[in-house]
Image 1 (cartoon, rainbow, N blue to C red):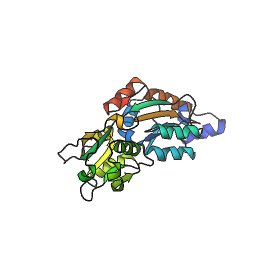
Image 2 (image 1 turned 90 degrees about the horizontal axis):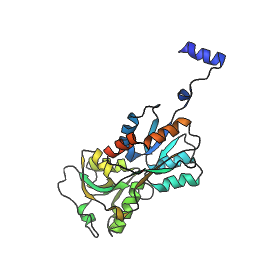
Image 3 (image 1 turned 120 degrees about the vertical axis):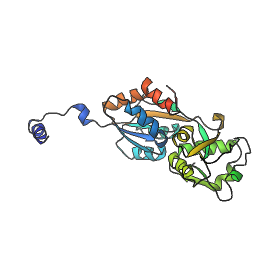
Image 4 (image 1 turned 45 degrees about the vertical axis):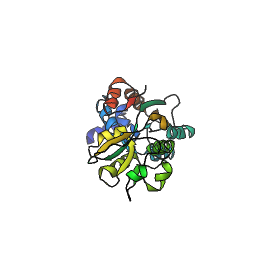
Length: 248
C-alpha cells in the first residue's frame, strides 16, 4: 500500500474516480431502517448516510455540510434549501409517502378512536405527556399538530407535549414507557416491537406526508447514480416492505 501511494505521488497517477468520490446522504430519521435496507441492494459504492431530523439536516446543509443527497420528511425543508440555492436544478422529486398513527407501549391493550373531540388529555393520565416531534421544526411534529388541530384537541394537550428533536426519539420515549402515548409515522411504529399502534389519523387531517429527494450542489457524479437507484424498482420494493408508499 505504501509503495502504491509513493508511485501515485511520484508519477502523478490519478486514483480511480470511484475511489475519490464519497457520496454522503442526509436523510430523515424515520427512513433509517428502510433506507439502510434499500442501500444494501445497491451495487455501486456504498454511501455514508447521516440520519437526523429534517430541520437539523437542512440547516447543516445550508451552512455548508458536504452532503450530496438530501431526503427530507416534508416539502418545507426541501423548499428551504431550494430557496437558498442548494439543490441541483431538475433533480428534486417526491420519493415516498407515509401515514401518521397514535402509539402506546406494547403492554397497552386498548384501542383509541381517533375522532373530533376525542379525550386525548384524559388518555394521557394525570401526569403523562404526548411524545411527538417538535411541532415548530420537525416534520412529524408539524403533521401531528395539524391533525390534532383539525380534531379540535390541540389546545387540550399543547401544554403536555414531550417535543423531541426527531420522530425516532418520540418513538423511543413511548417504547421505554416514559410517555403513555405518542404520535409517529406508521413506519416507525412497525419497526419498534415495544410499541403498538392504537389509532390511525385520516390523511385528510394534515398536509400530505411526502418525502422529497434531491441532489445537492457539488454532488459527485456517483450521487446521481445512487439517487436514480433509490427511485428504481429494487429500492421501491425495499421501501414498501417497511411500510412506505413509493410515489414515483
